[in-house]
Image (cartoon, rainbow, N blue to C red; front, side, top):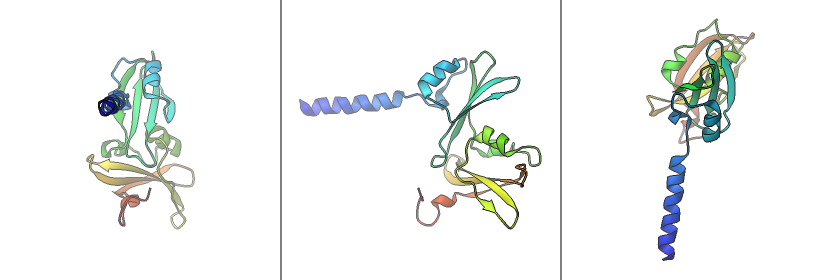
Length: 165
């Protein structure tokens, strides 16, 4: 009997965890307060001019996802999108975007290395290329905080025998 109760309790926990809302599951039309109640506090909140509020849920530095939920001006969800993808990184425009723009789009980076020889700083975002390969995207900035270039490669935190978390 105790064993059956323990099994039922474990099953209940599994079902409960599976029912937890994630940013990926937000349906269009869901009001912002309902999203906040089910998904929780975002990493950041900003306003997209002419559109409405935008919530960002980032797993950086250890995870590989950052989800953006865009709302209309009435506070209803329009879309939910995974931001740490090659398609999203391809939208970065050197010379036109700032450090603040990049952080608003992708959230806080996993790392912020500086390069003294080139007088640049960068943001490193960890992501899964093709949803499989641990990768990193670096966004480089000049001394004024303007994007100069981007560069991708293997996630350096997973090289050399394992994840360095």
